[in-house]
Image 1 (cartoon, helix red, strand yellow):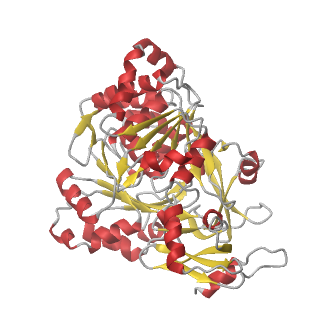
Image 2: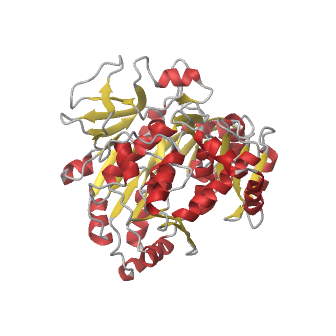
Image 3: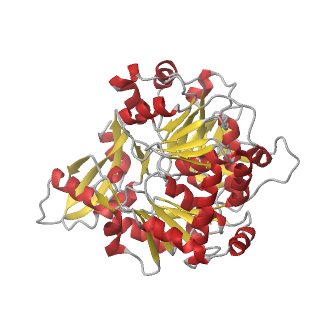
Length: 549
């Protein structure tokens, strides 16, 4: 999974190997039961509550905790409150908030009544969030109040779509007032709404930017997500005894689908963490006996470099899942030796494939784990093709294409983009270039689509260039990714100014910080008289990239 809430990419897995799964996931993975597979989130969560009712489901940063039984009560209240607000099957519920218990409750509630979740990146500005709310046709938004010196409702106010009927603010009164509406909905009405949900229901619409420069809404169903989560959980060995610290944001499939939702379906304890800070995470590992800790490579570099690591009890750590960028084998060895994790798995996934395509296996050798992204999970096909969509031989590079139960239903209100991505035979074209070996293991070598990755976040130059075009001094811009020791890649903008306009790099970067999510902001700027173009006027970005090598 490459990037935060973004499309294609690779991720690295590390986990202890366990063959046992909870019955909920076992049925879904096709192991250990002759019962039909569970195809809806409310049914899967109900099974988890029945098995683990008194176990801790969620432990917050404050130390406050809630059992599976009480979490289910909160879910029912929130689901009833959604019904009281007029929400029903097929409606969209957006969430714009950092990781916290209410995010989980609201997500489960939306799934329970067949409404589709629309997670929104907390780094987005008001105009960006407003665009997603409008295009998703969201009727209700669960929104952070004031967080990290940002007033989210005020940020949205000038850009609030008229279709957005309700904003539930997660402050001292907003969430309680929302839940109080549940009193007007009977248990029978709630049960009827839950019973109407089936596996074909849209589980979410997750917006992922594309090369056109505008985010696209990826639509996936409850059944296909549950099957994908089950396959992933089986591979990484989530068990009820795990304590899963989730720093990956809930607006991303890694923090949401194989994060808190996968964790709850495995019956373990989920520990949301809102903002990464190495010292705070180290303290939490020791205090809360964390066993599973996912995150991008920068997270582990920060933990390894923090002076407090040497005096922190890390003995509880069992499994780490790190991704969103290439990772050096030497870092894997440091994670093993200095942080105490035991087994590394690697994999590959896209938002368009419910987050998972391929995974390594526990018995794979170190070379395979370090240098490949595994092989396709059961029930999923993966191959590399040439420009004419013909499979290439093992060992030859080609575009990675995927077919199977995990492939999205399509892009929201964009049949053209859907047809361009999923061909007539059902193969999803990822835009990534890879090499398959004779065993079926994939090695990602390049990207067809014009993107780069900054600290785990996918950055799409076309989107950034579109946002920069609003600056009155800019005539044209081209953004490329350049190497960065800490973040992997960062953006560099090549800018052509309008005649007579003046602008310096500091002023432009400051303007970008005001108008786009901070991970999209170029870290450096070069002002040029003209951009290199081909005869048709297309910017030759490879020439710009070559200047940076």
